[in-house]
Length: 175
Image (tube, rainbow, N blue to C red):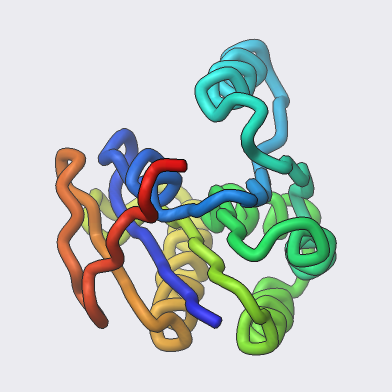
């Protein structure tokens, strides 16, 4: 079992790097929801870029269930992304701390490799509104808890991975 957390800002290259760490057969757990045309187009673009070599599980809220389903299909799982998952939890008025605890318990019991992607929000400006500040704080605590449980934590900047914890994982050989 190996847990890898890949952090970074928007468009930092974190998803591309995380995908490069996943050997076949592999599953992609997508947490995004398409609420508008821009997001529908972004999701479609990501599906096309990934191609058919991924087993895709789309689940915006029940991440534990999605991980269980994906683990039955593939030894390597990519979750993209925890930021959108947390957004979905907040909007559904779920108990975020309890859901993160459930996620961590599930991760500890996984047999294969799990690569998780999350944004780093703490480097930006302080959000103007209370909900934004609450989300930023919940997100920061979630990232800290997942990073603590992870074997490896990587921060991507301008497409360049910087190891914060553990040894830099090498992409698997091309099949």
